[in-house]
Length: 135
Image 1 (tube, rainbow, N blue to C red):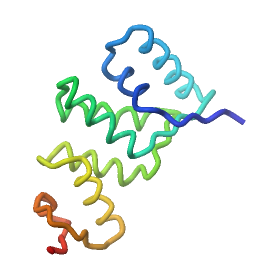
Image 2 (tube, rainbow, N blue to C red; image 1 turned 90 degrees about the vertical axis):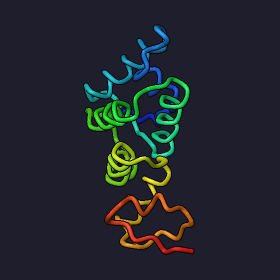
Image 3 (cartoon, rainbow, N blue to C red; image 1 turned 180 degrees about the vertical axis):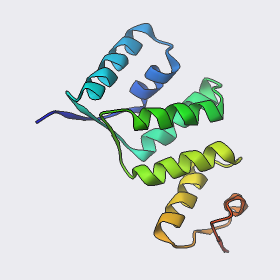
């Protein structure tokens, strides 16, 4: 049985930002092992959120490029994303609209569950397929 590892945001950030040579090489090696099938990497939604926040807020990365890079990473071999369909939907929503990732996740979850989000936040109204329960 191959080992599984829960990814921390620092590994993903180093892999995508390529700003720390030693950490980048270790992250690349781990990603290659996952691609080869010698291990499985598990990516949690809250880690995706932290990676987005770190890369966009602190590194000044482009929002659309960062979303595309994360989507590509999630689709690579050996990586399993928890709640993958919702996270993919949320990344696409976040990439296309001027909203926080948390709101994009809430919208994606609401659509998946077929329930209304109860919120004061009018940003949810930017999604045509989400009907917010207005408080």
